Every structure is written in structure tokens, then in C-alpha cells.
Length: 325
Image (cartoon, rainbow, N blue to C red; front, side, top):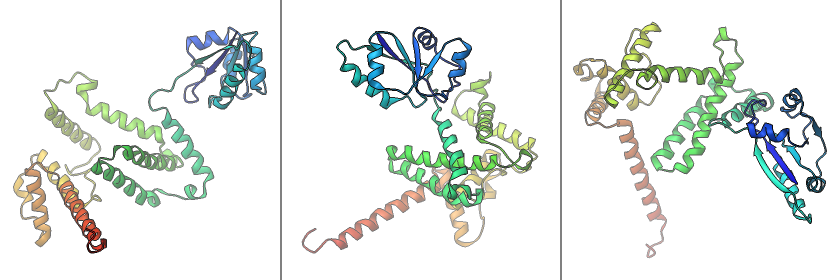
């Protein structure tokens, strides 16, 4: 006979099962080791009895030899138990057929729900996480952002996955803190964060989500700027430079201000003779870099990385004993 294992995703509403899973659950004796399995009420509504048992791998394998057993796996998949049942089945003279039927599948992004759940538990149960504020987390947000940047500069894409996870944690952490405030006091949750960026992306891509026709990437950029200008006006922002973060590194800040002003048609002459002394020279270098199609922040970082490599090579040469070069 057959031992059928039905697995379900804890990230999908329990009543949403595949047609194959519903058919299997109604085809044989259904057992589970979880008396709080979220699918139990739905099976009861469909008149499908489920027996909650203390699983014994050898007994399950033996019973499946004579009848069809359907095992409703716990939300973690009962992997260790299923391996034990498989080993026990091999000891039978006539081993039962073991079949796996996925009842539901994770959609892309499903593991984000796990992260939200873990963050919620940390906030409630970890003394360190419980005392954090938006302000106390700022250094970590900056550090994780720069670590992402470093992996990209190094071309270390294997490390990039981990660093993006660390940065994502900061986003979820801040959203969890905001969730504790009332909506009238600036409160929001992670769904509000995700919903806000979804709405913004849809609004700023009418050539994808509406009937706007564009000729290429340059027109997409022009439309983006026009839509942003309309958004600023709707929010009561008066300056075209509103929204350029003043807390970013100075070269990036100068680059951002100049770029935003240029796209809005501000005369280039206003970017000349700005500031005094070295500051004026640096600001002008930013203008020259932009004219050459370069990012001054990236260029300076590349020079700094080159300098670091040279210093490290010098250190290694000094550490090498004479005659062993």
C-alpha cells in the first residue's frame, strides 16, 4: 500500500491547498502528530477526520504496508520523522510506497514573513533588541549600507547576499519600532512600508503599469523627474532640492544637488565659484566629474582603495626579511 506525506507551507493560508492535496486527504486514513495543526479546522469543515497520534516510525511503516495512510506533516515538514519512516519501511518484507504531496507552496518573498516573525519575537524577548530606538539603530543602518557597498566594489557577490540580509534587517527593525506607535503619532508597520514603495513604483512607471509610451531609458528618467516634481508640489514642498538627503557624504551631496538642479534647468553658472578655498575647488571638481559622466564619490573611493592597496603592499615589503623577497 502507500504512505502519503502531505506538507504545507506555514506562510500560506492553511485553507489554500492544491487539488491533489485535497484529493489525497480524502482518500485514506489521515494521521498527524500535531494537535494544533492549522489545517485541522478546515479538514473538519470538509468532514475529513484526522487522528492525532504519537508517531512511531516503525509502526507507521508497518501499517502503511496494509492500508493507505496519509500523514499530515507539521508546518516544519517533519523531516526527521519522515527519514525515520523511510528507514523503517526498508526493513519491511514488502515496503510500502512512500509519496510526497505538497499541499501548498511558498511564493517568492515568502521568507520575508519569517523575518517579520523573528523580529517581532526578538523585540519582545531579547533585552538588547527591546531597548533599541530609531536613533540608536542609525549607526548600524549606516554600517550595513557601507558593507553592502564594499561587497559590490569588491565584486564579492557571494558575500553580497549576507550583507543585503543585514541591511534588510535594519528596515524590518525600524518598521517594528514604528509599529509600537499609534498611527496619529507616526506609527506604521512593515506592510505600510512595502505598500508605500509599491504604490510609488507603480506611480512612477506609467510606461509599465499604465498606457504611457516611452522611447527609451532617457524618457523614462524625464518622466520620473516630472512625476517626482508633481509629488513634491502635492506635499507642499517648494524647492526642487527638497528630498536630497543632506546627511550623505559631502561629494555625494554635491553631486546630488548639482544633478537635481541641472535636470530642473537651473543655470550651470550657479554651480561655479561656490564656497571658498578648498571647498570651492572640491565643488568644482564635482561639477567637472559630472561633465565627464563620472560619480565623484565612486572615483574618490576607487582612489582611496588604490591607496590602501599600496600601503598594504608597502607593509608586506617591510615585513619580509632581507634576502627573502
